[in-house]
Image (cartoon, rainbow, N blue to C red):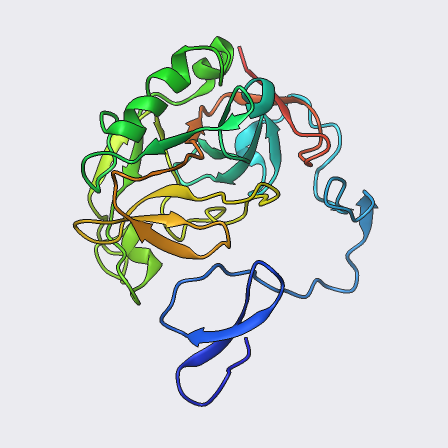
Amino acid sequence: MTPYNNAINNFFVLNTGQVNSLSVTNNYGVRPSINLKSEIKVESGEGTVDNPYRLEGDNDSNLSGTLLNTRYSGEYINFGTGENNLYRIVSHETKGLTKIVSAKSLKENGTIKTVTFGDSVFYSSTNTTGSFLNGEYLTDGEYLTSEQVNMIEDNTTWYLGTVGSGVSYRLAKYKDVSMSEYATNTNAKVGLLRFGELMAGQFDRSENNVNYWTLTPYSTSHVRYVGSNGAASFNYPDRANDVYPALNLKSNVIITGGDGTKNSPFTLDLAP
């Protein structure tokens, strides 16, 4: 929150933990800070990354049979196979559905998989990244089981608004900041998170040089990506970056176990 001077620079924190200053028109992640009321009590947990505190009244026990679409952004899910088996809840942007995203870059035989975005700045189910996510990712058994594929909503709307330098992240979804009309979009079973979307920058960076695509064009020639330092950047669509698949799970997906933490992610099934 701290200004660097009385002009247009503000302090920000680098991925190294150091502080620096930059113009407020630049794009960086945000970490909301709030005060909880004094009567809030801790129900369980140790306050660690893998076992965070859970708050009284948070409905975090006896969750078997609970609909996933009643749960919260940031919670972890056992979804996927092998080394690609951890996802997180993003939001419930579409009523009844649960948007989730891979918690780490996809890997193939222990190596991070990188994919060129495509031959244009607009995502679709047939561009290079979209073709992979709506083809090989769904069908070869290395990333998902057939039961998990059946949990995914077949047709999701993905917004493709352009966000250039120094403009609002809202333009990734809306035509203007008044949010009165949606931006250009495409339909596909699997997509990516857009620039500025919740969870778009909240990933474990224990692996070096993780740069991953978003859905959002920067211009007619560049696409937005998130760099290894967590900062928003842009590149030509014919360059290769990591991919974090995003998808909507159906309204009848239920929790069968786990408490939603990284150490004990939710396990899922389809309700009959």
